Structure formats: structure tokens, C-alpha cells
Image 1: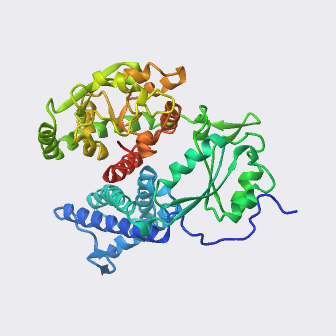
Image 2: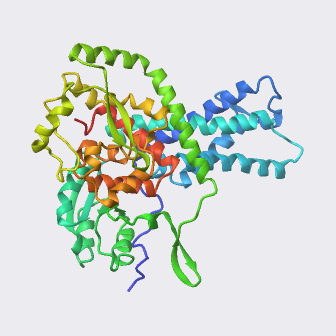
Image 3: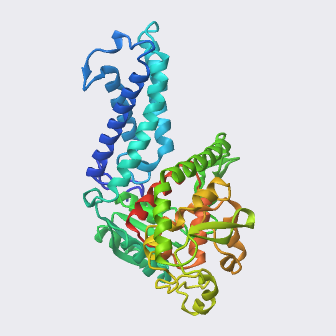
Length: 469
């Protein structure tokens, strides 16, 4: 009998999880970003010390040989770390910046051992280093946003679901609403460890197994290793309230197996960087979108009598109420009419109010909501420090009054214009429990990179109006 961990067959060059077209496009985009960064650095360095001739053995496409050595080393390192074959890694912008920095810092060591007397201009080195991080970041954002919309860049992912019977339908619908995903089978979670379960998964030709509510007994052994041997990814949906352990790493402590969750030295600076990006992003958004504000204001005035803006008290940080601003998408007496519409509430638990064909929406309101243009005035809330670009969505006092105790954990962080709730289905999320779990997952796993990934996904969804009404 072979070891549980032994793979049935070696696979030296597995197919990229994100597809060959997407992988090659990302490689090309990173190369373009690096090339643009070096051209920019060379332009900035013109008035300083030029690049020594020893660093220019030859030129190609107007770039010296030194650039091509840097480019090849950078692409190889990014490829080794999974930036061209993993869905999660390809949007890990923070780790990508660390990898690029590692290449540049390593070049100093290589240069020293190659020839200590040969020294590249400091102005060129630092400008190329910072420009490489910035340009690759911008180009990759644009590439990923564009690739989201190309069918050829979205190889169909076959998904097998293991979940409680009450959750299977909801998970199936949520997955199949997204382009590029197909559910090929499902099984109740209480049969997750049955002898024929893995056989069914393999026969379905699934690429991924999405599991929720797995019994904890034997979780560490049979199912995980059999799927790994079959080269099928296992994804765990965040269904538990106690998710902090997923941030940790296994470590032996005083002879005991533990999960270590380390404090991060740069953690406080990462949050300060988030707040700086909030302010700069909101300010830039208001300036760049000023023409849109004017057009929308005129459209609202023409469409319906009443003011252009609408404000409502929402619950924010530490449970404090603030006035959140929106473009008005409903009639002026919408608040007074809500009580009579409560009986038509389509939310399963009744905590949040949802109604697809809300009669209070004005003619232009449907378009504003579908494109999320009605949310743009919240950029002013961000400038005033009441909201963030990314965070749990602030809810009305009516909704919060119906919360259970654990739902209020979402109020421990600054609310946001967008968040995991919005990119996970927006109006299609049916219950406050589902919403709160997404918010808790965001809080427990927060990083600046997660915020950037959510912003990119939000832009993609907004452009196509998925899930809003």
C-alpha cells in the first residue's frame, strides 16, 4: 500500500490554473511594464551619470543588455512564485513588489562579486527599481481588468461542490452566474469522507472542489490528500465564525502542534498606506469624475422632481451613525413608502430590504443602480474619514436594529464603498448571516493587497452591472 502523500503520476508542467492565454498575456504585460519603467528611468537619468559602457554589451528594442538580464530574472522569479499560473497569486500585488525588490537588491550583490569597482548610477538604479514596481502594478491591473472580459482568457473551470444540502443550491447558483465556471457535481457534506466520494469527483473531471460545512473529523487526512494526489484543488468556503486560524502557519511550540499568528512589523504602516490611498483615490475620483457628476445631476433633475442627492443615516465605525451620500435614484417620498413595501421584501431573513422591482425607483434610477453610479458621492464620505474605498458596506439603522450580537463585529472597522459582499454577488446575497460572514472573512484576512484585488474586481463587475438592482 503506497503512502497517502505519494502522487499517482508526476506532472512536471501542469496546466496553468488561469489558462495559457492569460498566462502569456500577463508575462507580456509585465515585460512591457518593465520596458516602460526602464525607458522612464533612462529619461529621468539623462541629466545625471549615464550608464557605463560595461553594462551595455548590446541593445535590443532600444533597451540595453542589462535590462534584458533584469527582465529575464524578474519574469523567472515571478513565474516560479506562481504569478502566471495561479488565480490567487496573479493579483498578489504586494508580494509582486517584494519579488521585484528582491531582484534589484540581489543585483547589488551580484555586481559586487562580478566587479566591485563597477558601479551603476544610483539615480538610474533607484528610479528603475521604483518605476518597475509602479509600472508593472499599473499594467497588470489593466491587463487583469481586460482579461476578465475576454472569453478566451477564461478557461472553463469545472467545480464539484461538497456542502450541507441546504447550501448546495445557493452555491451552485452563485458559481454558475459567473462566466467561466460550471458545476459538474455535488454531494452532501456528511458524505464527504465516504469511500466513493473522491471517485465521483475524479469521474466528474472537476478542476476544483468547493467545500463548506465539512465535518472536522479526519479533515486533515484522506479527502485532502486524495484530491491533492489527483491534482484537484480544494477550496474551503468561509462558513465558520472562527476563521482566524487560517491566517496562521503550523509550528511546534513547547512540543505541541500549534497555529502561529504572528504580529507584523509593517502592519501599522500598511493600514496607514490604506488610509492615504483612500484619501488620494477619493480626491482623484472626484476630480476625474466631475463631468460625470454634472451629467448625472442633470439627468436626475430631468427624470424626476426633487433634489439631486440623497442622504441616509448609516451605521459606521464603532456603531456610530453618519450620513451617507448617494445620487438620488428613488422618488422623494421613498422613505415614507418603505413601510407599505415591507411585505414584498425578498430578503430571506428580512433583515435587509431587497426588492428587484421596487416601484419607488425613478426612470434614470435603474441605470444609476445597475452601473453603481449612484454610489459615487460616497467619495466625499471617504474624504471626510467616515468611509473607506474598501470595507464592510454600511447598513441603515433599520437593518442594524435586527442584528444578532455577532453581526456587529463588522462595525469594528471603517465601512467601505465596496467590499467582499459586492464582488460576491452584491444584491444576490440573501441573508445578513451570509453578508456578515463575508465581512468577517475580509476583516480576518485583511491586507492592502486584498483591498486592491477587491477594487479591481469591483470595477469589472460595475462595468457589466452584475448583481445590482
